[in-house]
Image (cartoon, rainbow, N blue to C red; front, side, top):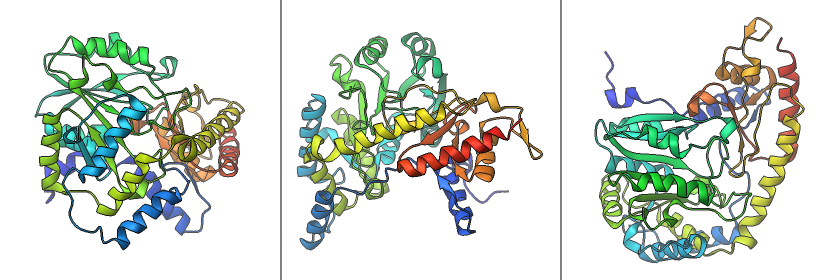
Length: 398
């Protein structure tokens, strides 16, 4: 009999973290592993942000703040939403958390009751389902595919809604696919949601700034449903601040207050030094500090797509944001090498780890085991080497 709770036994370890751990273990044994499993920019945090954090330390900004973040930070976040997204929020509608993952968990735990249905388009980010399990929610998975750029259609959304549906969890730009919803696509989904007054949207927009098709479109821009949209953002991806753990939620005041209450019992406020760093990040000029990173990601995406076209059996689309390519790999199922037969993408990922020494994440982590997630958040030299290794290993499968 397990001494652990049913709650923790019911959830799975993050497969992205698990693959990263396997990579570290192999590296520790002297094997040259290229790990493309974590969604982590390889850029350094901009110096101006680091300087703001250093100043905060020197100024002894080391005491508890308001649970939702100190008010000047939340004012800066409100200005960012107005400047970048034309969204009007007040400081009591903003909650700063220890990473966007906590922001998501706060919202789900505050809204979802046992048995409530939550629509999750697949592919989905790995933690959505596990957070829902902790809340007692029932995930309703809506499968999409490469043919639709991995986007849910209005009809699919409408067909999935029942009288038990409480929430929709959606990301744009999307992890793991890199898909970006246009304004018209979001509007069509919003029109469906508008017909169901007890239905809420959690819009995960953490990859907002890594967008190759122009300005980012937020779900909350539609006034007729804004009072039911929870916008998730943060500094990890666009500002190369993964380890700082700074998440942002913008939501109707009553939801924000509930999340403040929830967070107050878990972590209280996030790190005061991180908050000062986030404050500076909110004020930065996009073209000076963020666009150079986004431009580099675009170059890397194009390189990866070009090299993947040279590998027979990888079926790709053209992701419009984030820093992932999500190829369909069923061509390799049933093929073998050296006594090992590939049955699904999980097998293929293990094969590539062992044979090519390249660590990727199988699609099973995101809802369907016909795909692999390839992160290009590293240098062109490393990406080229990784794809050369993959090509050689995949050509051995017959």
